[in-house]
Length: 443
Image (cartoon, rainbow, N blue to C red; front, side, top):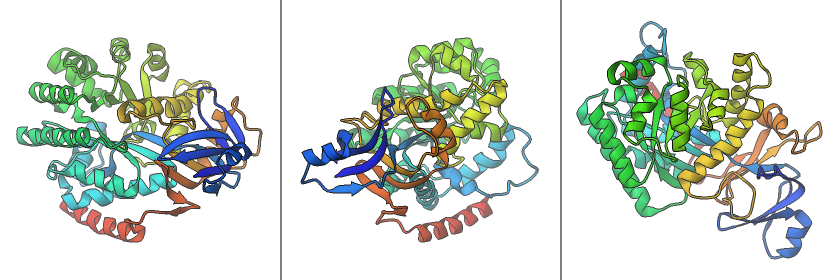
């Protein structure tokens, strides 16, 4: 098809903007980009869809998500309110993941998939845990992503906190799923090797996991230095930082993700940068858990690859973008910090990470890139150009209504309406309410 009559934000290396632009799409790829009249003249037999003058831009990528957190929304934590991050883990998340059953996984994934589609999130990199529902759990999540039509990568969170038998099953689940992904070679599905965090993973489990990941040719996806306790634990038990421990076993790879990276020192940042590993930043979650603030300026000065995720807070990347800017400006008491960085992390960092994981050109409207696109109802009240696009992104487009969402050349949302044949949203939400109530009761 041709999508014509669009105001195109290509987000290419030159931040090119094309008024009255058009995009030619074939077989899930962008084949040509230009002015509407020119593409129509050269492709007279193609079906044309009118963008109605809306903003057309690449879909957004979520670099670190916990889909199962859907069922925590509104849940009262049993007992006294947690007073620190360690208690949040023990009294909320580690109770919730143990209570998950196989039937909970699909709806807890589909709900954020659909909200993400409505907000223009087209790619999700997930990190899953369900110690009492491990076998085939990643297949269930992958099937949900396929039905939703999004681009998806996932992993199972290996940990020793529930004993060696559960840890072995977690390793086996990662190996089984990654073997499947490697065999099928689907452009829309990928996997990483999941680990919880170094402070819940013993030496043998860590080595076995990293060795398996290396044999399968994938990186690891692990929480790192999210809370100060992670750093203190590594120093006390191993005499090194969490990053140094991971580096020693070969976990730092160009396709690995360290989630959070708040309590790092200069040596940690240097090791991460040298390995080309990504650190995913989740500002809203960090504020919610009161774990501290990433030193954004030090990370960028060291050359660390950064990406932006939501950590299960939602699947709406616009909210994370704005929070990133506001958090760092306020934390440093310098309004110059965080503005351009937030946009660059979301648009460039997430794109680079997704390209490494999925092996496709993504995140730009350019020839040869995947047709993961969104149309937004945004009629700019001031001049919009490549020199001020960041201001429009954070303070305008972030509030705009997403009219349409496309992944792999297929409309998932068009004119504000979902186009998903296999999903009845009202039925899905009713099922989620029923299952989450049962889960809360089990907790």
